[in-house]
Length: 151
Image 1 (cartoon, rainbow, N blue to C red):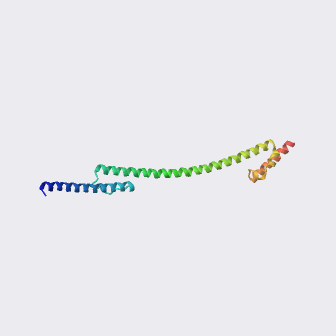
Image 2: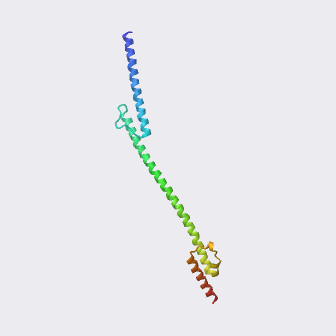
Image 3: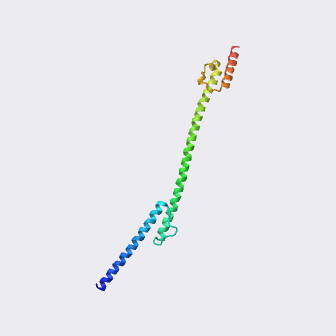
């Protein structure tokens, strides 16, 4: 083997070794980046084979990802609170609607009582919207109206 061939072979071997080393560095970079993206964690110190620029970008990505994750958790909690609040408001609205119907019925009965006092006695027990004592008072009032009309 001549010196020229030997030098050429030495260059090829050196280039191959350099490429092999570069391949290992790229593989390590890929592992770190993959781990950083999946776990949002970086090694404590910057590995020598990662450029300052790429290291800074990775750190910034992780910081932003953590902020996004925090905001997502906060929004999820707020959404849960809104759903709970909506449920509570729906229940309260149903209760208000039920009470509104009851009050309208009571006002109708009182109006009928004033116009026609005997109408109070046509109210069935099952459709009576008044408490027992209040219904008794309305009947007494009806009796007074009817007595007053007859005089």
